[in-house]
Picture 1 (cartoon, rainbow, N blue to C red):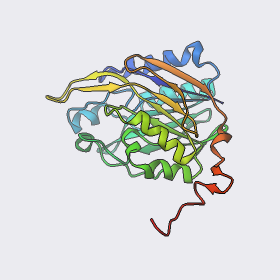
Picture 2 (cartoon, one colour):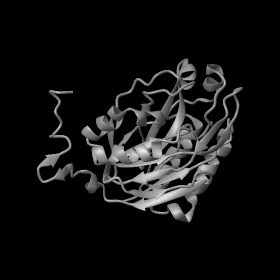
Picture 3 (cartoon, rainbow, N blue to C red):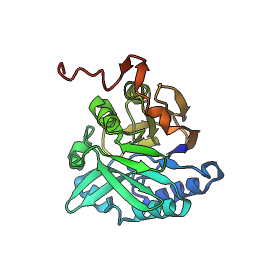
Picture 4 (spheres, rainbow, N blue to C red):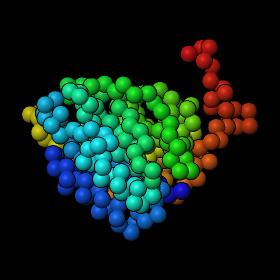
Length: 264
């Protein structure tokens, strides 16, 4: 199957323009025939909300909202699966979420478990389990950005059968691109980290520069594709999801069966 990331540079609050930018990439020849696309965290709104109130005004219900609807339509029309990071509104709360849609429509949503820094002042902590979904030839799981810092997140998805971890991100710390190599090795899974580029400086004394370097990593830790640090970019790779189902390290070592849960 062919998998892809789209590395974006959203303009804060310009939802329609940000969505249309992604749709233009989806329509490009480079993504023709792709089976799975991953977009960055908060791809439609931008990242740096000044307040809960501002976030609530820009967030949307999933799957009924504008950005969600446009991507669900694209998945239906083009017969692919897509994971996108979205500011989700439910009642008076907002969540930093990732949603999955496919050729049959909306599939599911995951709400970020581990909120980073000022996200704690804006979003409610995620209340959805780490769950694995069928996406064509592969089983996929979702985590969002800072979840990478907690190895339990990737391990939970791998134990539940994920072949691919879809990882919408807005990375500012420099460590994640290399750390995801380890996450893939220790769980024998593919990972698609879709990050953004650009700068946001909407809060006094808090200039955020996003590091790009979106990437697709193999179950053996190979960097199959990595984007630049400063450009909007699309990355496409052909993979075999079955490569993620062999959990043996040697003929006598299996990454799950060899766990010493009695000692942890």
